Length: 328
Image 1: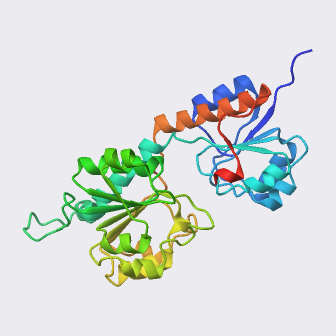
Image 2: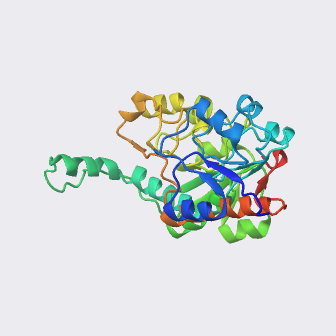
Image 3: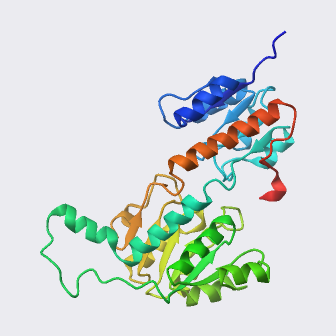
């Protein structure tokens, strides 16, 4: 008898190459149109699937996991972050969770540097003037930004992405500083020319630019709150490409509007697509629609990892990128 293929439900449209390969290997339900599933749709998918392939737009909490059918044995997340999945509850139900780590490191680090450049050199303001047709010509005092060379960059969260940012920052002449749960070995610090700060408060008070690269966990929720934002220089810039929940968005908006910060570059937001409308009005902030990992190469590599995780599971082995609660 032929081996029965796994029923795999994919919650969002993936690159054509990835979807084609999934169809070759499994019985796949693809998402069309490319819109997030409602909670009811997600619950129904979990009730009938052997494997669910969600993305960051799917909030899979304990209530949804309770609706999972007896067939669901793997949640193969399309993405590295899994803070939208209750991994501990899934594990209690005997459901494995996997992710796609390491794929978006270089792409996200590139975007960090792009946001730093955009915020410090006022690129969006210049672009807006050019698009409006109101540019009157060059002026010695127009659009004055800040030079990067010699400035202090504080990296909050020195994991894969933070380290990639540090390497790029050195090429721009930035001094690299970092705060992390664990201090890196001396040889790593030497390679990155990075200075460790045990106290986040002390680091923030001395930085010209702060790049947030830590995951969202209960301990990092609003890590950059109103009190800490007030510690920063009025000339400082904040860049966030990790998770919006790490920053108190309302406090950041107030600081920017009050001139207590020079600018910000954001690719992620505390409430998803519901961005504080006052934040949109601030001229010295750069807002992007979660583009940090949006490269063709990155999306294909993410798909390859998802397929490998499912295929390995189908063959009776532990997925190579399995996530366990102790890792979070």
